[in-house]
Image (tube, rainbow, N blue to C red):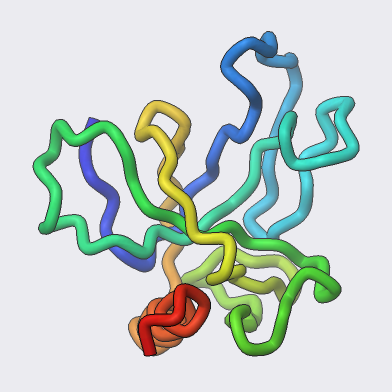
Length: 137
């Protein structure tokens, strides 16, 4: 397992460890929910943005900090969500939101890489929003 660089778009398997992997699941990079029979995110593959500095952790460290992407603007609290417009670089197909207030640590075993990434300015904004969300500013 290797560390993904900050700003990389990855696909995270949010399914619970006790749940069987459902066949035919897929995720779109625009924050859409892959419908795998569950109406909530536990049961879905979802895109996320890597926000940690990969150089801070050894390659064998088992977890990574990410923020999920969604296209549901209702979840995008303006102070804590970064708007991501579709580009060839980020792989989004529609406008989506990086939910900085949902920052979480996930196992590297649950992360699948993509070739997509956000801009340095977007990453800086997401990190700033995380700081606001945890009361660090």
